[in-house]
Length: 154
Image 1 (tube, helix red, strand yellow):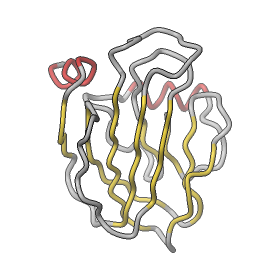
Image 2: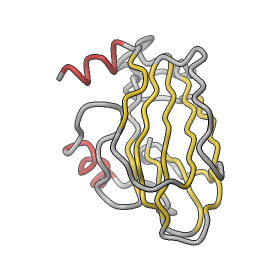
Image 3: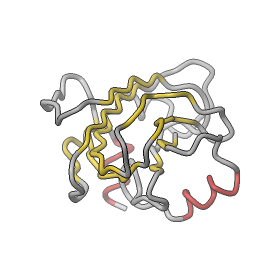
Image 4: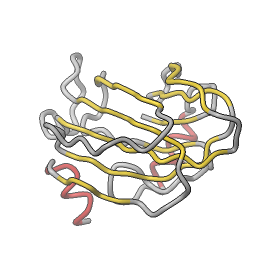
């Protein structure tokens, strides 16, 4: 999945560019100021995604999430969208006049269930929360899935 203020689908060329630079964790460092790549456990298929755009930092809610990470992202004014490779983007929300630095907290569970397989039914869940906050370093808050543990051991 790609979190972006870019209003069109991610091309095959852009997907390859993002993946070639991929590092450990869910999200590699931004390649453009307005995009982040969120890695899923499945190779292809649907996932369940809930998104929230907040005005301030939320309390940390671990609940039953296996993985929780935070990253900084600089977003331009306008809409925030989320898209899979070759998919049409769908609107998450609108952000303040920008460019504005945002904090992105990614919660994930279910990545190990059908790792690297194509699926027809969702087996992974994601909660993506954004709020305005000055840029800070990346933070791995919870590493519970084998998928993410392997990424950090690589």
